[in-house]
Image (cartoon, rainbow, N blue to C red; front, side):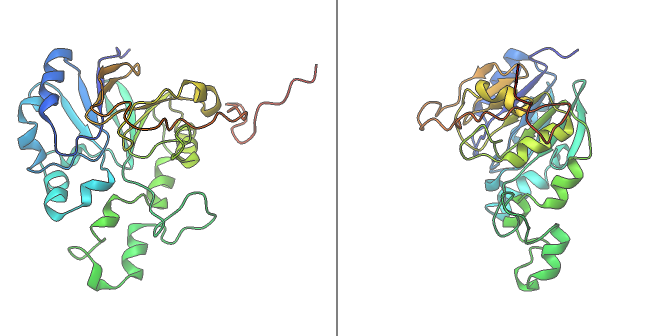
Length: 263
């Protein structure tokens, strides 16, 4: 049984890692997970060398982690490259953690629409000019895009927790596709970054079928959804919690709402 502080979730750092060692030294988690937009200006393993002596480090990419070749290499070519959770499930501190990094981009796939433009990275590479390939493969920007192939593969697995950069539908700028993925994985909790604030999604928990937590800019949250370190911009933005819909997730029949009480 995991305790609340066994795993800590770190919101977007955007190159600022000064708080990481302090939090890890104080809380002593078994593992930490970065929720994207790390924007490491030097190799991530060099930045987190002292942190790595105390705990496991895991991560998913955000949209800004492909802003430049340097930022990309400092993450994807670092000694922590194998700790990328994007598109897979790993056992971390006794829990199955699934990861979906990056963002939805219309050129690839808009989940609200019936069709996608490119199903997989290979599909994209085959159908665009080689002149825009990056190192003989997928363009740099699209390496932080969510492809349907990754999403479809992930949803066939099982997990206790899902970490994403994008938000689920409890956020006004979130996606119901994230909700569906969470339910198909069988998760109990979801943690996401990207929005640089912490929101109270509790009114949506029953509807979605799992708990969801937004982690703020350079903020830290534990497995219980408790804020260990407040985000540096928490409360500075308009509330993005979506209006609660009446539809409620029924685990016995996931594609339909609970029947109305006619008694």
